[in-house]
Length: 369
Ligand code: OSB
Ligand code: MG
Image (cartoon, rainbow, N blue to C red):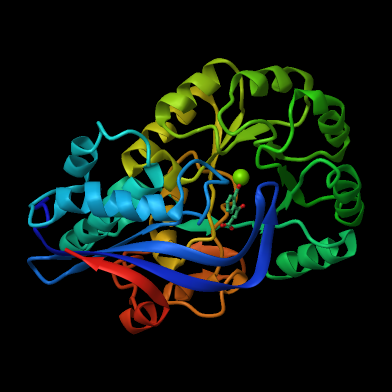
């Protein structure tokens, strides 16, 4: 495949209002500022990528202003005026430590150019096998259990097949009990975003009776050792999110028994090639995967859908229609979405129309190389 030659590179910060606040164990988001990377090639094609980063370093260490600076200073110069493939890019920047979400934005902008140049959609370039992507809901912490039950009902009515409840100490047992009592048969899980420690083993064990499909990231964001200890005394399978930032992290976590399931947020592991390696590891070790989300705009959902189509991504993804979090969007990706399912085809991503006027309207900062 011919590598694209980059003739223009831009970084944009867009400020997207959230249609309702999103609360998790690490805090509340009221609006969603995200970074978009736009690359233009010699042939006139445009590729987009997204760094769906949070404003503050409260999920992982990356934060919006730092990412903006890093992409501008270290990443865009690697591609500007170069003929470079996504693979060559990922190899060239391998010596730069972490900053995975930032790296992912530029790499996926290159993937999107490669897709349009070759007329093969990203999910097929990546080796995806599943065209129907089932999705679930991530229900932030609500002001009350009653309110949570309404959110759950709405999500189920929309056709979402898995419900994830955000929990933290003091917002766990009663909440899960209420949802489980009302819905005995749904695929139900919790996500703690690192808000517990091993001192909370009794509380975490109390959730075992609710037949949860998994418990996501109960312990520290940078831990696997304590998760392995917890896994030994818990019936509910542990899923890691924050702790897995590379395929090597995944290998080690699997080796010590820290998780049975991994929430792969492709951006968190920095590269679609890393996602492919994690898919391999999962296949070899009988680990289940699913694709997580970070309240990304539609731009960031395209590579996520591609990952969700890989063989081991057998559980419903946190990839939603834009309407879940936002009041408007910049693409027509929703034409592939119906009742909780995205259907990928030979056009997905390739013909996705990106409304640059919409992006301009929400842009609060940009730099052009
Ligand atoms: O832990 O999965 C998480 C959003 C921001 C930061 C961390 C997480 C989340 C979500 C949102 O759960 C899932 C989605 O994008 O639908
Ligand atoms: Mg999570």
